[in-house]
Image 1 (spheres, rainbow, N blue to C red):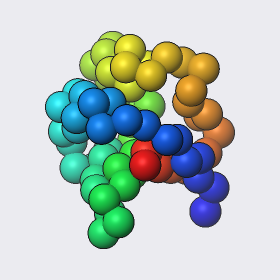
Image 2 (spheres, rainbow, N blue to C red):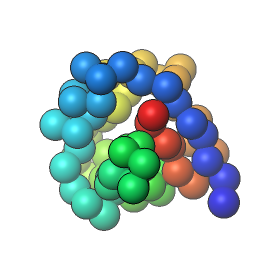
Image 3 (cartoon, one colour):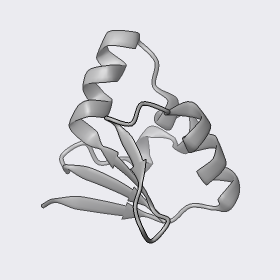
Image 4 (cartoon, rainbow, N blue to C red):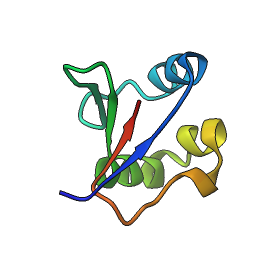
Length: 72
């Protein structure tokens, strides 16, 4: 499994949880980390034309070549 861990503040955590609510894209694991399925996220953004994580974090923070982003 190919992942990228990204450290975030509690304010960014709240913004991410508000911006992406689809449980097939995002979920919270037992440690409290936010896990995003990159493939599902990019498919969703191509359909909606919205890029909420890029708006919150900036494109430079995200690596699209991994399977999951883990925000902790």
